[in-house]
Length: 356
Image (cartoon, rainbow, N blue to C red; front, side, top):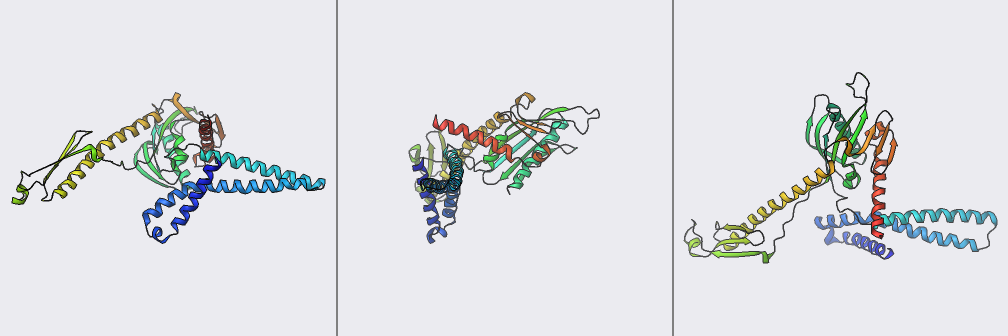
């Protein structure tokens, strides 16, 4: 583990030095690329450097116990050694978590979809409460929130709302919010004071990146022939038309618009890329939709991941057995304790998997 950490520190310092070079500083793309890599290393480098400093202090302080100190001073040194040892263990646990396999989507922006489930108008009102909770949480982190689609009901609830959250680590913080959320409370419209149970479904999806199309030369068959269309004597007498066959898909693209064989080939390749991109995008969208369906289930109360119980002022996350109080504060965006508990549980599982 120490070898990996040393490599990460060297890479971090190398990137800082590279960004200071004039040829890099004047290249915005390289600066952005290096800055992103530096940002991804900063937390682990900080923790490792502190771990090294604490380890040195622990060795130096521990050595003082052999210097013939009086009883009072020796006790003070032992207390400091114990405090340093606790800090060292805490940093070591943090470093193990940083080195555990990570979700490649963690740093991405997210698309959040909230839909009213069972419970009629009360479910729609609860969906609006959840949107407020996540948007306030985003505000606390200085993240941007953009509503993409919204279907309101007349009393201030949402049948459905889709919104984006833009900010580093948004997916890492919010990915565990996916699932069925259940609320137990007395609706404002309930005259008898009876507690109702309603649900809303939440889906948290990482941002969709452009699908890159990698077309291999060996996957193409390119035929050159004379144009049969209009374009003058030059086009018809010379072999300038292009037919490209993409062998894996069987897709055929032809182009004979230009007098130049090179231009026709470039046009044909652009058409081929666009068509293949459309196919890949459809596959990608189907995967996202499948992911969304698996996250939210049917919206039935029995599929809950979390319950918000207003009479007892209690939030319970059923996946990790977490119970916290203060629903008004939580629904106002103070979700940090819940997010941290879910992340800790996930990190412990990943660490266990990495050492198994």
